[in-house]
Image (cartoon, rainbow, N blue to C red; front, side):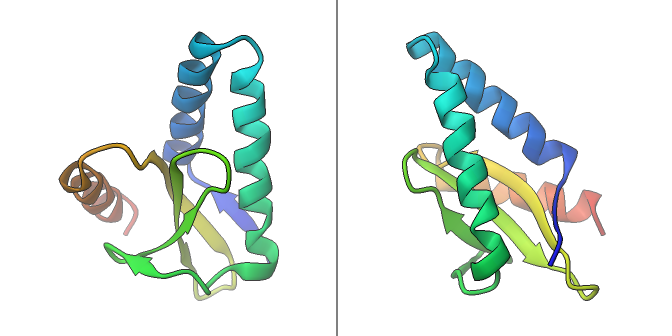
Length: 104
């Protein structure tokens, strides 16, 4: 099974890394390591997560982030967004709807 991150997911990771790096030196690197470990877990567990706003949602283990992904017909796991869960749920829903429209 292949896992593919869209540019929007990479941008989310970069924003999260920058935020945590401002909080404490080297925390941004730890953030990335942790989130990529969660992404790697999709090799085994893709598809078992609850669907939210039309996407499967994997909650990160160590940070308040959620990985929103879909299983594609060709067998790929496509990661659309990696969002901070501390946002207003309405903002998350709007972000994911816009992402769905962009990637049809």
